[in-house]
Length: 382
Image (cartoon, rainbow, N blue to C red; front, side, top):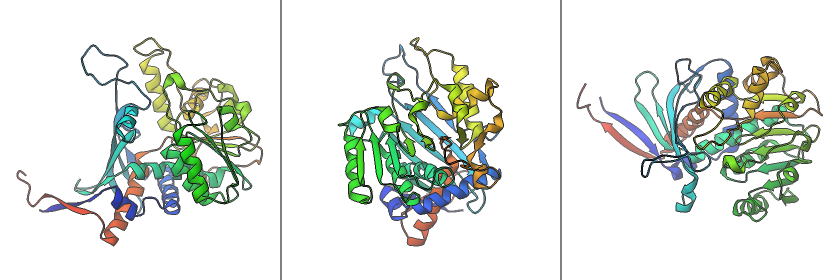
């Protein structure tokens, strides 16, 4: 049996609508709904693994051995199945290295494969940097419709890289009163912060105030929405303080959220995209021990893990941490009080890559975009 599949490079993906914010937001809503209805599979024996990550050591005696010498240094395979109208299996695979910047490359290079869930026959193999960034940015924007006050005007982008740029595109699709945007990069003169300012000026004339902030505190104070998407080394992590957030603020974390004020989270509404994922992160963190190979104290820096810490230490019931899918499916309420502070942890799942990748694949087929590649006319061995 002959097998062909569609290859989509980045230019093909753009033509197929990968940057369509409105479409991506609705796809994320449908994905979270299916997740809440258990119409999905992830990897592992309990079908709940975020993915299989290859961790690099901090030091090695072997010459040229790859080391964990920067933020987000990893290779990862993330298999999944998503049901409903998608009914597709697949995998996101990527390598990440902060030193790529010196080579003129993105930190992470990603690909997604879509396969028939019964036979394993590949349907598509696609460039996934924009795909992954857009689905990541669309998730907090979709959640904002349930969690952000309707009169929100001030948006703060902490970490002005690709993820927050895609998040901005999606936020502006659903938050129609934004007139002030704060930006926090590595410094007031960082290239990414200045580039983000230029992008906002060129694309969103309704934004009258663009402020590049010098400190994390400045970026958080008086913001109605805080969108965190930092990628920093463990040594460079800044600590967030709860007193920085105004009444009614909504805080979305997609990267690094370091805080030691664990008890203060109890004063907030805590929301996660996948509770079990953060439980697994905490178990892995504990298994790896309190210090790294160089004797440095290890700290967890994912918002959802702070919530798990409170549950594990019997400071709050598990039910106090709300799954976003239950809000989408009408089981739990979103924002219920104009003054409550909402903390929402968005870690991402390969389900989102598959659903948005599937939508782009179908559009590419309709438009005749992409390159058809042959796997075989007949398999050499059966």
